[in-house]
Length: 284
Length: 171
Image (cartoon, rainbow over all chains, first blue to last red; front, side, top):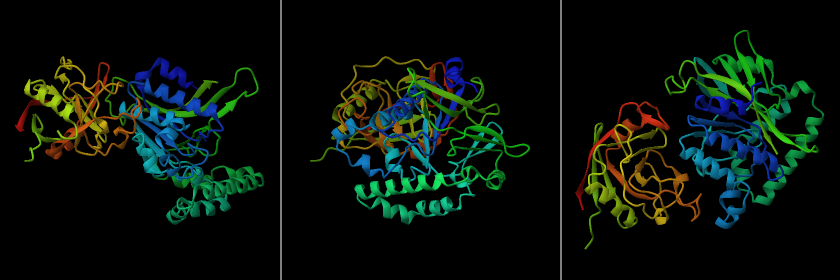
């Protein structure tokens, strides 16, 4: 797999879009946060980048926009999210769109938070034309249809009433509920067969009926699959801290990028635009 | 007796845009802008940076993308309570909060992230000093023009969007 660092140092003018997912950022993972900031620095240096897609599970948990928005100016200055928001804002001012999709962890993330950096919430599935191909973008949890328990749970959690109910609870209650859900999920996952925890073939075929390719995350199994005879399924990877106990640890993630010939028509539906997976790494 | 707010008309090759300036909330910025208008600075400049869904920026380059010399930078007045909402005009600048000179931009969307949130580098924001009272339809056309790279500049309209002249209608 090509390395992202190689791409941006050899042909920076050709990188038009970057797509990531499953960062699971939290204050408990400072290396992952630093790695995301490093990716944003890379993006800020790309002269022709038009769009950054964050396709779900950006945050390990999201209890509501008010958690950050209700902080005082001083509290925000010290908050771990503030450097992220600053860099994203700068990226937006440079002319790059920032499109954010919900995952199963951060489905309470709202437009008010995205407005802090000029980002936009997008719904799944999201249709993106790359070159001649129509890509279908989604987080991936909706494709795990063998996990009936989860799909039932998901239907409830994604319902507007549930979200309204949760967001109206005081923060400590929300923390307790999230903690409870996480524990239950871990217990359930320990008992699930591996196949339940991956996408279902029939669901994938259904998803591909009106598209030429499928792109998702969630499963933490980055790869390119030949889903049908002529259609591919691309899976983005989760952000991982590797070699933690060795002298040199690093963060690694499989991300996506759309490139095209810098001399072609600038619109990113130009005929020769190409999507590929890349390995992004940052030495800690 | 209430003073009428100053009004400036931009005559462009895609139509006329009329802007009402908020002297009360952005006195230094409006004074600076009117000085450039009076001296003919904006005549023959283009909207050199157009990003659909974000803003159209101009007042700094001629049609050959040469930057026109400017006066000294002005103090940032973004803490005046005015918001970078759709149809407002604000001053462009570099990372330095107090670096605005002649370039301005018109918001084509509510751009909350450009608003003042604190007196620090990340939070200073962009000074809003007026709003479009006529010509939003012209701006809607402008924001959709094909753009491309021009040297180190991105989002440059392929066909120049020219400000033929900027004139003060009332003051």
